[in-house]
Length: 418
Image 1: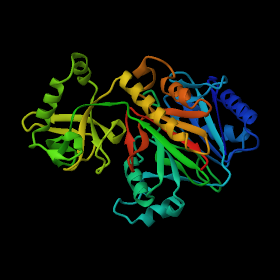
Image 2: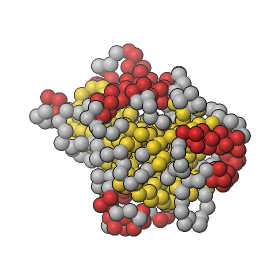
Image 3: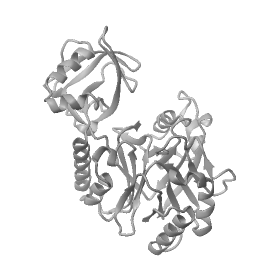
């Protein structure tokens, strides 16, 4: 297995594609089996020309990609960089011996109902669950029904891993762009809605790092009452959840006020604009850490009832904890996850060959005040792995045994042989 990535910041699309292709050809012997392309919205008027121009210069049987408000790739100094405002084009390509590559385009209208049997999803994607495929998805942020797609894939393909992101523009008025090229595909190469993706089966391992960038505050609670996305009651879980002892239920707003009172002045100020709630995804794990929570927005409160609306469906019995996010916490969270991944790799017989980064538009210099933070941290721990990616309108990655659409997250997809 061989991966490589090339990035160009040339203002002309033709020149950028030429530069990227030349660098790909210098580092890759033979033609690739798969290409994954991320193109800056600065080239938006030329989006219809992207695939034809690229295929004139490089033979790639399967190619997916999307437009991005910021682009990530390897500079000519073999350093991962994040280009957030200037024109940029990033192409990751791979030679994948022993891997079956199944590309697909899915419109929102083509998705089955969520109560459809698994076979309906299997027929739509065209890959057997027995192959335990690894999915890479790129969707438009408005008309893809991506949450239904993620739920359907988890249902039909238990044990599979799914990563990706929602196309972004970085500026108002620029439509989404999804790029697609596949054998025997007679349709268009540029889509404005839906999802493009690939299912990879066989001689390949996909590992993920999903850094949500938050730290917990206060105690662990159990939802004692709720309706759809509204929490009506919270009960404190004592003894850290080892032997679950649940206190009397209280209104969530009352609980939150008590939690905020325990914070120092700096954290109280941070809570004014960066307060979230984490929902534990593993029902049976007793000791919960930062990576065990699905981070969701707090949408509002009802002062009369003390109820609280959150950005996800909830149910009684789930465990939750309030969280804060800032640049220091975000960087620390990613570093802890990278350290853990590095330790895990010591037991593997094969090293990683390539990686993709799906990072939120709200990260980067906006969050850290520094360029290349997440990609630079990744290279500090995994410095020989070619990295490509983009800044997303939403990031796709697993937490626990389910796949979710995230915000303010960096989701890494790391590829290696078994």
